[in-house]
Image (cartoon, rainbow, N blue to C red; front, side, top):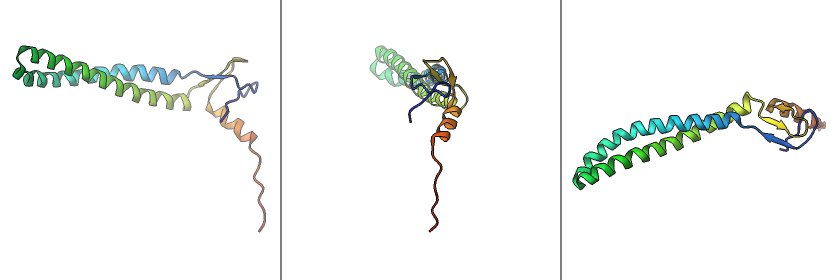
Length: 126
């Protein structure tokens, strides 16, 4: 589907994606925090298991567990936040910006414009 501005019919359109970017950032921070907290519990376990490797094993096991948990949690949170933000962009926000006339519009305007372009269906009597 080619996006056209409902105001000037230009095809020179950019998507703003404010919801997607915000959701991704908030999700990443929340996921990293959650992952780090969960990893701290895992780090304690890693440190306990690392006792077999001596003091160096305790330190490496604890730090590696915390970093890995924060990275995995942040990635999962960022992806989930981006999906939620994308849904908000498409449903509630005026996510499209015309670079020719400066008009911003949401997907409702696109749906209305498409409905006007589609020709009526002709039914035949059989």
